[in-house]
Length: 83
Image 1 (spheres, one colour):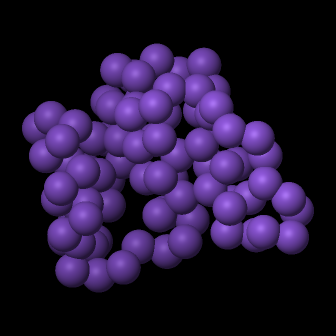
Image 2 (cartoon, helix red, strand yellow):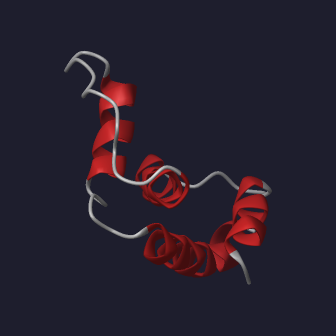
């Protein structure tokens, strides 16, 4: 399975992953498509933006190819539960 296929299949989950699981996907997706976090940290009161920023920044230094592989592995881990 390639990265784009995993992304499309993850978007088509029939059940909604938990927030923590969503952030796992989000952080790896951003690292795979953009690279290291390149935006300033949001304010502490913007909890959603802060959670997304933290999920992305925890993958800092991971190559885009490694992030794609990790995203695919994450998809394969959750697909039996949410697909």
